[in-house]
Every structure is written in structure tokens, then in C-alpha cells.
Image (cartoon, rainbow over all chains, first blue to last red; front, side, top):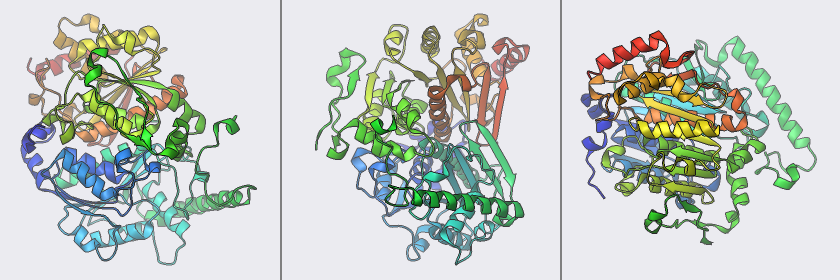
Length: 312
Length: 317
């Protein structure tokens, strides 16, 4: 094995980055909450960019069903903790990286240590865990940290950046204690992607908010990683063109179209309320249909495709 | 538990002895390819329907070049559910690949890129059927590599112009659709060549080139008529003749592979729907812009000729 040398490993970034920018990335530290669908690819993207410090956390272990969309999911990592697996992966790219890994989900006890000293916070917690998102946004806000969040939706990536001067995420999404889970997730998804470009790509029948199941797609995760790494570099290096909420961005891989816009009132604008009402109504109707269908044992999407013979 | 059957076919028998056997142990419940297919790829349900998922599983895709962007493509296609992959690359991993090649890690340094990528693909899908070629694509092996291939992904090194030309010509002869996505700076540039679109030689107008350097310039300009990504570069670090690599970041390769995997899926679904050359499309993450257009005369258009002159003078040589 050849000896590792930071300057040699990242020399081909020069030409895009200046040497002082590369040195700054090496000194920077990024906190990535969640090492699943998108989090693992973020870690890899930042590591290959040359970022030197990582704070990562995830309480889950890799399973077979993660293989279609999670970079850490391989035959060797089945049953292993996601954060610890990705820690090894970052070390295999940059053995000099400073990594703090938590093999537990973020909670009130470890969030302080997790965020301390991070120059940038990336939210890669699964979309359905709204309470965890709220805590992360709140604590990062208290520390004047920027949070970047992207969601793979269908074949598209929806990205928002919450900068210290902009609207508070809690108000942007309009979350309140006592809202039902379906409403909270709907507010989240629609606030992330007001352009709703994934409308015809993602079958609402395959999403079950209560069971926290939804389809996933690796190509959209890769796109999320590329854009998040770019926005991360923009923040860490003070590059021009910074944008943040209430602006939003969604790029679709299928049509290769990009939509950018502003949502000054967040999820509380009139149009957003109407759209949300329609979406929740449709979701509940499909949910009821699924439960009523004879032969369906539970209100969950079937775990597998229909067997090949039955499909014909 | 038992060892998986050896699913790797050697492209070149001369290397067969040194290629390590896959050591992946496959748990009993996913011993059959069908069981694995159901368990893993049913997670696409709702985004990719079953017929298309089966089409992906049965398709054979050639990833020409397992280097920077090629390794990203191979992993993306494996996770998308493509079972048959042909991987080629003539190089071994070195330290400077760590910055942007998905297959480069400390344990793979010094190893053949195609081998290392193949092993990782088998970790993602132990039922993958792989053909591995350590020679890279050239005129002598291209026909053999294209046997049974449904879609080609071109991720050959930018400066390997002769290999690329041989590949594109063979693809056109056989009518196999080909997608190429080049990361430059913070951006990516994509082109699709397929039956019904413009021919490769015609689009890039290589007939007018008097030297290899001019061919490379024409290739760069055809890929990126709007010069997407070139503004992100310090052009003093780029050479037109191939002494150094064009700089780009891993984040651009990540975006490129997302775009390519989706385009492969679209090509398998219905090639007619996918815009092909002379249409081009580009995305730049730094400026958050998608650029698309149509170069009706390819590089023969007067504007493209002017751009070639300007770029040539800025590159110094």
C-alpha cells in the first residue's frame, strides 16, 4: 500500500479550488446527522473533497433493503452500525481525518457534543423522523450554525439551506406540538420541495408515513450529495452565490429541469395550505383503500414485488 | 452459508490467474438471484415499476473506463439493479485518485481499477454478472466487449481520444445507445448518441481537425458548447495535449453518475424519448443552472469554430 499524503491525495482538486481553499477545507469540520440513504454519500463526497473533520451519528445497522440506495450497504456491512461503518470508509479515503462517530441516534443528551465545534451542519436524518429534525434545527440555530438539508424525491433532489439570518425552520415548515404525524411530514416534504417536480414519479400508495416506509432511489441520492457538497463548500469557503431559505431548489434527473423559487411565508402561505390539504386528503384516501382491500394483512405496502408468475 | 458461484468472467484470459476470486458469502435467504432481486430492488417500488426493474436486471451495460466518473457509474448502476456489467480500465489506483474516484480507498491503492470496482460491485450485488477487462477499450477488443450490450456508458479518460473514437464508432455500427457525462469543475455535461440522432464524427466534426490537440478541443467543445464548468477552472492547470488531467471535484462525478444512471434507465425504457445529439444538456452546481441547447451543425457551426479558437489561445498551446 502506498503512503498517504494529504497534498498528493487532493492535488487534482487544485485548478478548481485554490491551495488556500483546500487548506481551509482540511481545517473545517462538518457534522452529518444520519448515515443512511443520503448521509453516507454526503460523508463520502465531503471526504473526497478533502474536508478534514467529521461528526457523524446514526443508531441503525445496515440491512439488505438498504443496498439499493445507501453507499455503506454491502455484504460485509450487513448488521453493522451505519456510523461506525462510514467512519471506516472515511478513514479509507483520508486516514488523517478527525472523526467523531456516535453509534446512536441523536437525542437531547448527545446533540450538544455532536454539534460542538462543527462549522457546518448537514441534516441527513430520515424524512419521517420529524422530531429529530426539529431538535437538530433548533439546536443548530441556537449555535448560529448553518444547516443544509436535501431530500431525494422520486428522481429529483430538493434542497434547502437554513442560514442563521434567515427564517427559522420551525416557522418555515410551520410545525407545532400536537400536529399529527401525517401533517408534520407533509409540511416537511412540501416545504422542501414546493415545486413538487416528483409529482408523477413517486406513487403515493407506496408511502406509509406511520410505518415510516417509502421508496428510495440511489441516483437521486447521488444528486443530493453533489448539490449538498457544493452548498457545503460554498458555506465553508465563502464562495459567491450563497442562497438560503425561503429560497428553494429542486432538480429533476429525469427531465433535467431545475426549479428555483422563494416561499416567503414558508408552508403557511395560502397556496401551500390548499396543496397540503389536497395531498393529505389523497394520502388518507389511498391509505383507507389499502386497508379495505381484501387479502391485505396490514396497512403496509407489500414488502416485495408480486412473484414473477403472478404478475403475468 | 455457502460461497457464491463465481460470477466473474474474465475479459482477457491472460489475467485470469491473478484475479482474486470473490469471497462474498451469501446468506441462505438470498441465495437465489430472484430472492435477492425481490428483497433489494422492491425498494424502488413506487418509483420504478416491476417491468422496468426486470429490464434493468436483465440488461447488460458497458462502463468504459472505471476511473474517476466510471467507478461512480458502476456503483450507481449496480444499486439501481443492473445485473450485467462490463468493466474496463487500463490503470491502477494511485494516491491522487482518492480525491474523486469512488473505487479509490487506501486498501485499493496499487490495484487494477477494474478489479477493485468489480469486487465492490459484488459486495453490492453478489449475483452480479461481470466481465472485467484490464486493457481498456481499443479497436482490437471493442467488438468482443460490446457483445450483448444494451447500453454503453462512456467514462473513458478525457485524453484517451483514440479509445473513445473506436468505442463510439463500434456503438454506432451496432446501433447501441451511448451516454457520456463529463464532469468539469463544478459542473457536468451530458450527451447521448443513439440511432436516430446525429453521428459522433459528424457532431464533433473531427474531419476538420489537423492534430490530436485539435481533436481534443473539438471534443471538449462539443461536450460543452456553453463551456459549462470551464469558468470554474484555473485554465493554467489544464493542458490541451494531455499532460495533466482536467480538474474536477468528486461532487461533480456524483451528480454525473446520478444523471447517467437515470439516463440508462430511460434508454432501456424507451430510447426515442431521450434527447440525443445534436441536443446537449449541462448542469452547473456552482451557478445552479441547467443549460440545454441544440447544435444543429455540430462543431461545424461558425460559433463553435470561433469558440475553438478562443479556447485554444487561452490554453496557451
